[in-house]
Structure formats: structure tokens, C-alpha cells
Image (cartoon, rainbow, N blue to C red; front, top):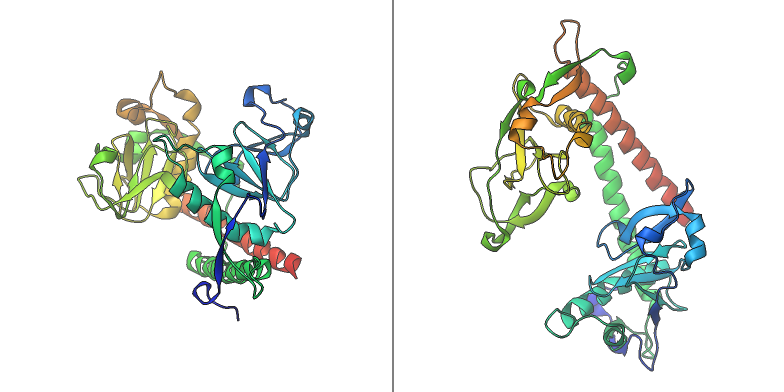
Length: 364
């Protein structure tokens, strides 16, 4: 057992002041993306101020380390974006990244500290004359759990994170096992290259329904996903309490505008859609997750045809052909698509369980 956060003693410390807990300095690399060397050996994380994927925009060749790099075992901070991530491996950064190090900064302590740092940055920094600077960052104070002698209790921080991680891993494992049971057993089907395929107009396969324009200023916070033309986060732009004529569920949303053009996401939950996203429902088969996920990938194969000067608008959507596997009668083989997608999901969930088991073994 470990004490709850509310039951431990806390005290205030200058994170980077005279009584130093950690050190913060500008990155040793700060390599603009146009300077990156394009080689095949792409295994070095390229960290930017992104707030997703641990700040990793892409992986680049180790040849780029000649331009400068930073050692793993630190926290990267994007001051103006108020992002912070633990970096376990050596990496290269883009511009305007700061590096936090410290003799007590382990992986687990970092995960305890990062939410506190981000909370302070969001509270202290803004665009109204009090922007994020290295000097202002160094002045931040943190409330931390303390030992009986009044020093930061790094052992407690690490133990707290370890216990919470174990709890989450148990939940993830239980969820994966539940999904495997729900999907059912693996059934052998022909490989994709062994199956016969035919082209079909998207409009022959799907009912294509519109989204509805809803600007951010007119939304109110809530729990209903609002689907925008994004290429990440399953297309969820924000959560709202609004509703409108685009309200839908068990549907494939396909972007015809924005960065995510032609990208689709499956939405089993009730949600509303931006006017930059179309709603796809099957015409001749009942919608289900597995077929729509198969279709998502099929439609994505057409992405190279479209761009900002040639948008994937409603007319072009309807007249675009996609290749589909067919059955013995020459019709779209929905049963094959469904089972193929199920097999893929079963494989991924089993790989995930094996990964969780390997993580547990490594931490023993």
C-alpha cells in the first residue's frame, strides 16, 4: 500500500532556482527539418513541440546526430506549446525545445513531475504579455511530496507512478482479453493477393451523407465527440454538448478537406460531424465495425489522387472507384472483408498482450 496524494506532506520548491531540483537548458541540437539528412537508417527520434506521440514527429537517420543531439534520460519541454515528455533514448530536436535533467530524474519520477510542470506552465504562461521564456520557466515553483526532513520525496513519487502504471496495465490487459473474446476465433481466409478484386464506384457501395458546419465559437463543452477533418485522434476535434442533423453512430466518417483528406475513421459512438467530413453507410449490407474498418483502408488507397488543388469533394467521392474483393457471384464479398478485419484485430490484440507481458518481465 502507498499513501494517497492527499495524505502525504507537500512543500513548495523552486524547480530551477538557487535550491536546484533540476537543470533546464536549451537543446543541443535544434535542427530545422529542412536540414535533416535523408538516409535509410531511420531510428533516431526527432522531437518537436508537438503535443502528441511523446513529441516525436518522425524518426530520422543516425547520420543527423552529426548536427547535434541530446542524450536520453531527460524531459523535453516546448515552452510556447506547454508540452513536456520523458525521453528514454538519445534524440534530435527541432527548434525551441528545452531539456530538463537532474540526478534524481528517473523515468518514474519524471512521470510524476511532468503533470506538475505542465500545470504550472499553463497557469503562468499566456499570449497576453506573459509568454513562455526560459527565464520565466526557471522561476517556476513546484509543490512536491516531502520526506520527514523536508526534502523532496523521490522514492514516494517513483513508487506512486509504479503502482498507478501496474493498475493501468492490468486494465489494458483485461480490455484486450475481453475484445479477443468478443471478436471470436480466428478463421483462415485467403490472403489479399489470392482473392479476386473488382472496381466499384463509392456511390454504388455507400450512402454518402453530409456533416454540418459548426464553428468552435458556437460549441459548448460536453461529452459528445465532434468529428473534424483531422488525421489523428480518430477525427475527434473536441467534445461538445451540441447536437444537429449530422448526429450519427456506427458510421465511417471520411474527410474531404483539410490535412486528413481521404482519411476515414470508424465511429461506433454517437457523435456529430463537421461539414468537412462525410458520413458513409453501406447500401447493401448492415454496417459493422469490421467491414467499415476494411473499407477505411480501401478508400485510403485513393489518397494520392487528391490534394489542396484537387479536393475530395462530394462529386469526386461519388465518382471515385475503389477495389473490393468479390465472392463467387461477382459481388462485394462482405463476409470476407469482415473476417479478414477480425483476423487482423485478433492478431494485433494478441501482439499487444505479448508486449504487456514483456514489459512486466523487463520490470521485474
